[in-house]
Each structure stands twice: as structure tokens, then as C-alpha cells.
Length: 140
Image 1: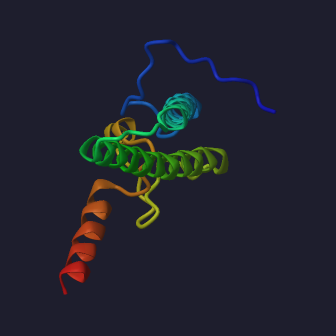
Image 2: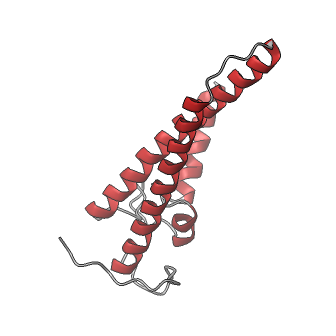
Image 3: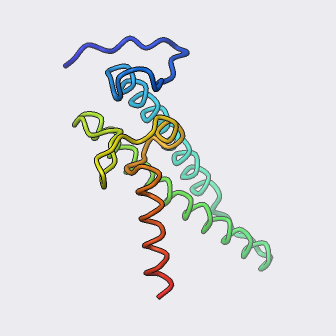
């Protein structure tokens, strides 16, 4: 087990320091762990709400509205489950020394992009190409 890296409370990764040094990796690791905890807490609250929300509603319109709300909650929960998987994959990339590098080109992903979306696996350029290819295949 390695020693924990000291990280000042106001630390933000900067372009003028070595890319993916120990401090940057620790910053993103903590950011991902906090995000995962927030998502899991939200999921627990959703499950509790769904479990407590089961009730017999005599009015058909009210019941339909409640069922629509439940379906939306379940769809949101499924998205959160997928997000947790992506967060855990990013944490594994940190452990493996692969975090912050594009899975397509091997180039560093910008710190701004990683700060905004720490689960990113591609540079902005590679992501845009990927999305254009997906759109072309979807449209044909």
C-alpha cells in the first residue's frame, strides 16, 4: 500500500506541472470517489422512495402519472448504474497508470476536459470523430 499523497484543499491540476503526476492522479482519484459516493447515495434515496411510494391510487389519471414517474426514476437509476461502472473503470485506469490518456490516440486528454468529465477516455478530437462516425452509421 503506497502512502497517501498530500493534496492542498484548493489544489487544481495545472498545465505547467508534469502530466498525470502523483498530485494530479490523487486529485482525480478523490474527485471520482466523491462522485461515485454522490451517485450511490442518490441511488439509495431513489430506491427508498420507490419502495415507500407503492400505494393504491384509485384515480386512473393519478395512477398513470405515478407510474410514469416511477418509470422515469428507474431509467435514471439505470443511467446512474452505468455511470458508476464508468467511474470504477476510471479508478482502475488510475491504478493501472492509464488514466488521462486517449484510448484511441494515446495522447494526453486535456486537464480541462478531465476536470469537467473525469470519466473521459478520449481526447475531444477523438470523441468528436467517434460521434461523427456513429451519426453516419446511425443515419444510413
